[in-house]
Length: 123
Image 1 (cartoon, rainbow, N blue to C red):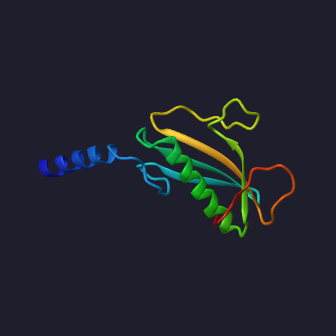
Image 2 (cartoon, rainbow, N blue to C red):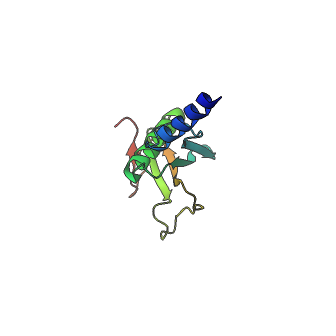
């Protein structure tokens, strides 16, 4: 019994000392999404405090590209971001001990006209 407890404590110490990897939401953090209509998503990434924001946003954009491709679109635009709380399109999140970052995206099959910052899937 002691060996099991020591092993669990050691595993928790090792897990807590690492950055959160790219993964579906689980005990150690990860991504989740909610579909908005036929062409949009809210994507959330929960990570531990050791994971830099640049890595978290890389994970968010990787998931955005996967979801965009899944619905057979070529482009997506970030329409709201939790990192910019003062913008008109901000997303508010509750404060926790984890880092939680959120983006809202809109997907496009064809390149839309206008001055929209787009990300091309596969580029």
